[in-house]
Image (cartoon, rainbow, N blue to C red):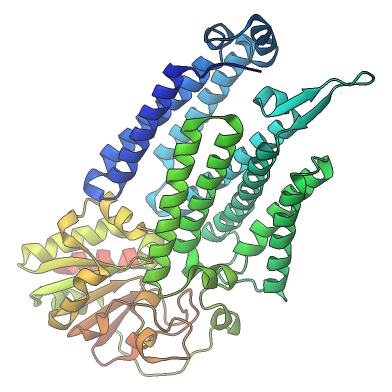
Length: 498
């Protein structure tokens, strides 16, 4: 099928791509995130409308086609009934998305992100399957009519590579994201599930997928295509199952990157520049974010994928030493913080589970009324996704200028009267600096133990963090443990401050 490129579509896709770039730039800062979201919505709207318009036969056939090509196009392009079905599907999807956005709690955002990644991966798989089953409709096949017999339809070699990579990455993204969702949502345990010989098994499956993609270039048999698909679904499951809760921020950003590359690969198959641009942006930004997360944990990306943070420690169980520790009350905490010049609040996943961000901000406001300086210290991997704590604090209208990253505030703990740790564990554990046998050794942590007093809110002394190791801060002379549900404890502190 020969045709000239629609110049208006190319221009519209370029504008959409610029909007996506502006969206990423806006999302890099809390203060500009709303503007970034708007740019993303505008860009996606332009891309969707352009795709629909250029696939209506009467419009799509207006650019430089021969009569024979026009007739062939009319047979392949969707009719008005199909366009109506597409619009109906968009309406249903929009209704689901709008309802989800309105109802979802910010504490459930990590699993929602994982679920959305799975849908992107599944979409890539379905597009690749459709292109394989009907390659002529996608313009990626050549037709040879022999003297005898039916025509021979051959998928272009370069399209086979794109298709193979697209379906492999898409299937890995789908199954991996499903496992991540189940772990984040509590349907599966957060501890790593270590299969025997998992490294050899994973390498063998990955080698098989790459080998079959290379073979697919020379043989477009259906068994090759569907075997690639099945193995890719399997490796997504195998890669994510051994990864524990402490590595979830890296997993979420990694799956985000995978979904982008899957979309880019399918963009080449569909000859859609908007998908290529968008996929490349998402893929590269997700890869950069994964690198940042790994650097924040002082680990290599390969070690995260191959093992699971603190896997051996977590599997070993929750064995703990019996060491003396001090217990305090809400009244004790309120008195100590009222007398302080500066309090640094360190939120963690426990705050998210208890949904204590709003009452925490109320506590901070009360302290500021008493003349106390209040700051928030955020570790890059605190929570279950990159920026999880920042999102929760923003939802509670915590001023952006009170929130500091690890490298900007760590030096202040030594001059701080009270470090108020609420639900953060591994990211405050000094064993990361002192114990070379610890699974978290080498990970940069928030130096809360240097504060004059550490108030540590924790549900009970019976559990450990996702890395499966005990926290030495619990037993230090300057630490007071506040054992209760995080939200209830902070509510009691607020009453005492009154």
